[in-house]
Length: 459
Ligand code: DUC
Ligand code: ZN
Image 1 (cartoon, rainbow, N blue to C red):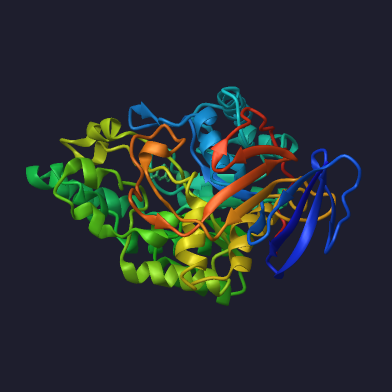
Image 2 (cartoon, protein in one colour; image 1 turned 135 degrees about the horizontal axis):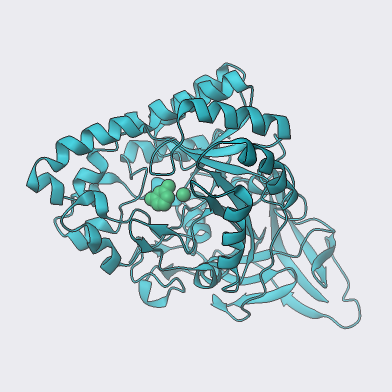
């Protein structure tokens, strides 16, 4: 048994000083003072914050994009995740056109055989629609890949007619989908203009100039309207901007249930990073949707505080600076995505909690409890409660650290926030009762298990 004493336990409803007793893989007891019961390792968490293990409901490990593959696979990605306090990730199985949902999911189970250092689950991505796929929605739910993902852009996009069919079927099955909302036609038209000019074709800045906030907002609005007709709760993933948020607000005013996710990059980085004259520097930040304005960052922080954004995930999708060079002559070929799974907790604490933008309780809500509920893992995950998995993060708010690629676990050769001073460190992480991280170092690998998720809770 392990007894964590004197820490401040954080939950969305409040924080309190209490002890936690871990027995095997579960939290056995929580009380103000727990006497040492027989043989027991004692951990003194005085002065520290104790969170439920963080959940990252949006990662892409071992993903093939733009003729290359993410540098982090499930082994390095989940190791980076747990180093940063994330004890459960949910990645995206994908059934590519021509595949059944079962085949797509099988493929992702194979990828996870690389060995996972945190627990993991899968959403399932739907890229086309037919009777087999419709029937296999139930298989996905049965296999624990209980929530879905669709795209309104990229090769994986589906059209409005298909989106409506998907939403109606998911409603029948009592589940939901996240959607990557960007207007593909608008982006294509702007890209055609940009590539006609050799200078703009080579410029990284063309990436964000051809994916304006209007493209995202229009798609969010359309997606919400389709969900309105299907009478289906939906999730907008990686919300970046106030214009998009306005569309979600409008849908909610119509009485719809729309959940919103944002990511740390949209909270702490802005589009001026694309203006760097160095291709190597500017291309590090190419992701879709792109980074936005500083005013959008503040709007997103406020929306988290006000409960308008329910989850903060990462969209971790890492490529090295060498891989980014694939787009040196044509910005459209830069593989999109950046790492983030390792720093999410400490960045949200430092930039959010320590700077007074959100409370520790809100941080717990958006990193732990809400993703657990929305993605069918609550109360096994996402809460410090008796009977829950002993997934626990001890965060020390009295020690500082500087972000550096040289010390990160991720195999990416850069850190988007290189040099940023963070006002906390992750002291210890427990994965189902097993001490997996000590003093920020991963000391126990490959203990991650597949989490068969239930249907979502629509709160
Ligand atoms: N956006 C990215 O930047 N990369 C992967 C997928 C996505 O939606
Ligand atoms: Zn993504």
